[in-house]
Every structure is written in structure tokens, then in C-alpha cells.
Image (cartoon, rainbow, N blue to C red; front, side, top):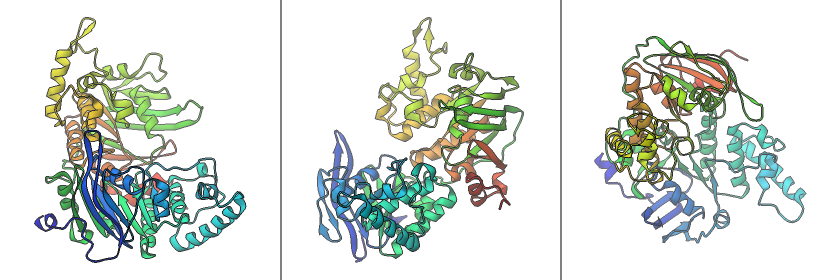
Length: 522
């Protein structure tokens, strides 16, 4: 560890620099997001930036791309001091950014999206012709073949990302910033993206990669910088470090990167789902005859790219949506029509639910932590006295939960929005797991969560399983599914494509199922 700790921050070993940031600081009110950060990014390299949620990574890159203006510090592009007051200035300086949530016009073609905002003159025809020719050349050079006349809404998520990269290259970007680029990709799409990025690097482009996935850092980057609490803690050649060292630099302590668990000993069947169908408000069928079961003492993981029915499965089982089919909990049928069931009745029957989006569905951000701890369970006699809430009891219960789940700061009077993402998630997980449910529905348990909090939340899920409870886990993180699940079901287009044991499958096979390809299919 000492060899990593003694590294100079941002050292480039004399290589020509694409980007240099000197003394960058940025505050939002009393919160200092970046503190005197200096970093050097060598030309023609893939440079990773990692750190816990709230470490200041996105703020730093937003300053480089002109979304924010630094309170102090200087930016150098290609050795020249450069003012970047807005994104247009960043583009003019040869910097492009591919955001985690793509910024494409869904009903425009690929070609129209590529030239949008970069049209030349009053007539579109010359710009479209130029773009069509350039797309053809880029497809040949970087394995980025996309039909220029395809409409965006008809393309896969992986192709959406490819179009975003093409947009930046069309604007002659020599430096590409990618923010969590694989969060919505299948493993095969992620592999293809990495081939594209390596091809761009080999052609002299510079890539800055923001990600929380240590395996990706180790696989694709040349250099990695680590941020913690708004400061740059180290920059190291990737070949000279390890995931364990990087995790320790990120968190400030040793972190267990694997899930420590014993083999499951499943008991009776807790949840039975037969031919479950769900339609959305527009009448589109989102679940198409899903059938599955979960037994006591096991975790069933649902793998799949976001948007393939996993959210609807959680919503209907949690009482947030209606559906058709048969669902039994401990042998008792659950009403799916919405007439006699809702989230409250689900909780009363023994179902707890950690929703996928903690800020929209799990918490009220302007309410205090102690108020959020009681949501959904405020009718519990322990929290109520007649028609009135027993606020003192609820606050004390919140203090106890904060201590057991290591919520920081352990202050029940803080608003939910005052906590980091990881601590917000701990509040929701504590509220649901501590109800001792027969079935826990948990969606994206570690989305946007710090490495230290990931380790803790994984332990809580395994402990619940070991206590004989059933767990339905939905996650787009294939590593998480493989590590936590005792059985894995893969969803594609609202259907279960197949079920596998983690010990008898691999990411390649699961990735094919996630893309709708059955093993042995032509």
C-alpha cells in the first residue's frame, strides 16, 4: 500500500499532456465539492477517475466541460491555458462528453442527431452529406457502424451510446469524457465499447473514463486517479495497482470486494408467480407471462438490461401496479387488481420493498430521516398512540437503526437530502429489512452507492437470506447478481429467457440471454 500512497498526484512521467488541471476548487454553498485539485492526463491514453459517490468526480469533469465555473484554478488543454466558460468553449477546445443519460432526440435519425447544433449554413443538405461521409469513415476506423438513416427510438441502448460518441467525433473532439458508460449496456455491448475506446486511443484520442466499476478500470485504463471527499488522493499507472488498493484509496480503509457467504439451504416456497402480465398506461404489455418462484433462505437474482420488465415486476409485487396472473405468498393468493391491495397490504402480508429509485420512491427528500424511517409503517402500534404519531418513539427507533446500519451522520433530524446517496440507501434498507419480512423485494440495491456502503448492504442481504427469508434481487450490475444470487433468472422484453445457477454459468452466457439470444440459437 505504501507504494501507492507515495505517488505524486497527477504525475505524467514527462508525457505530452492533453489536459492539465491546476488547483481547481469549487463550492456549492457550504459544501466544497472540489478542493485544490491538480491532475495531468497524458495524450493518447485512457485515464480513469474513480471515487465514492459525492467524491467530486462529476463536478470536476463538469468544470472541464464548461457546465460549472471553478472558484479557483486553471485549465490547460494541449499545454495552452484555456478558459472554458461553457460547453461551446469546451467543444471548440476539442473536448467532447458522453453523459450517463444520453442526450438524443428520439424521433430524429442518427444523421440528424449527429449534426444537431453543428449545422453549417442555412441549408441542411451540405451538412447531412458531410456527416454521412464522415460516419462511413468512422465506422471503418473504429468499429462504429450505425445506419445513418435509422431513427434513434428504434435502436438499442448500446447504439445510442455509439451515436453520442459519433456526435463528439463529428465535432472533432480529441478528448472524450465518458460518465459511467456501461451502466445500461449488456456485457457484449460493454466489450464492444471498450474495443471502440481502445481503437480511439490507438488513433491518438484521449479518453477520460468516470466509473465506479473497479474491474473496468483494471481492464481498460492506462492510468487511474482516485478522489475522496473532494480531493485527489493518488494517481497511479493501472498496471502498478490492484482493485484492493484502489478501493482502500477511495474509502480510506480496507474493503472486502467479494461477497462472503455460505451455500444456501432453501426451505419452503415463499413466493409463487404464474403467468404474470402487466400493461402500462398506454396499453403496452411490459410483463408477458412471467413465472418464477423463490424459497425461504435463498436469493433469486433477476438479471437484465434496464427497461426489460424488471421494474414492472417489482412494482406489481410491491403493490404499486396492477396486473393479471397468479401470485401466492406462503400459499396465499395476492390480489393484483388494485381493488383490495396496495403497498400497505403487501407489508402486512410479510413483503418488504426497497425500490429501485430511492429518491423518487423510497424517500421524501425534504422530510427528516426519522419521518422517512416510519414511511409505510406509521400505522404500527409502536409508532402511534391512538390517532397521533408517537414521534419520540419513532425518533428513538431511527437512532437505533442509524447505529446498527452505520448511517452517517447519525442525526435523525437531518433531511434525507442532506445525506449522501449511500447513506440514503442505508436508511431505506434499514427501514425494510428490520421489519423481518418473509420476502424482501430489492431493486438496484447499490446504484450510486459508495464501495464501503456496497459492502455493508451486501452483508445485510446475505444475513437476511441466512435468517431463512426469501429475497428477490433486481440489479443491472451483473457482478452483483453473480455474487449475491443463489439462482439467476434473466429477463428480456418482459419475459424470463432462462434460469441458471451462478456456479454453472458465466457472464458471456448471461449476456446473450440479456440480449434475447437463447443458447444454441442461430
